Length: 225
Image (cartoon, rainbow, N blue to C red; front, side, top):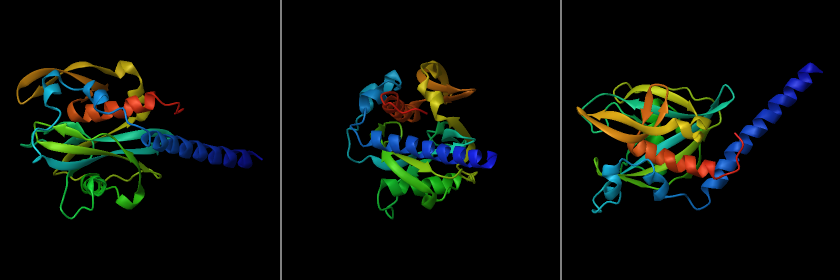
């Protein structure tokens, strides 16, 4: 009988996980919080330049990848390798530049995720997207995609692009005390910016702005995590 109870617990648990993901997908089909929610995490110096003046901006796709690990719904971030790029060493979502061979920016986000952290596109279920965001410092328009991996991903990092992986419980971002003003250093200059904090990790800039919209969408929902 104990084995039967254990089996029932497993079935109920899988049902609950599926219900949470379905609820997030349903929320993403509704009108999105939009750019105003992104503004909440924008450095003050950038608010006036969030809308591109030129149609020559480059396109890119990033992936907010959800998955369960140890029964906890996680969101994965990468720490970019230190190099000469404008986002060197920063924490971000996996993703990158649109390629002419990509069918669309969803494909871009999946392809880049595979290239950077090794998760197969066939293992990822796309459940929606957020509002596009312009990044003036790099002249990119970013299309944020939300994906779910039903099995715990096996990550294989591309060392030339990714210095490390950060797995954070999604509920961590739903608590206001983890969102604050903090100091970051960019090319020798210290800036005071709004950011999300997880241990010693600081998530700010475009990544925090995208995350801000997702957090607002979840906080406005009745989803029980």
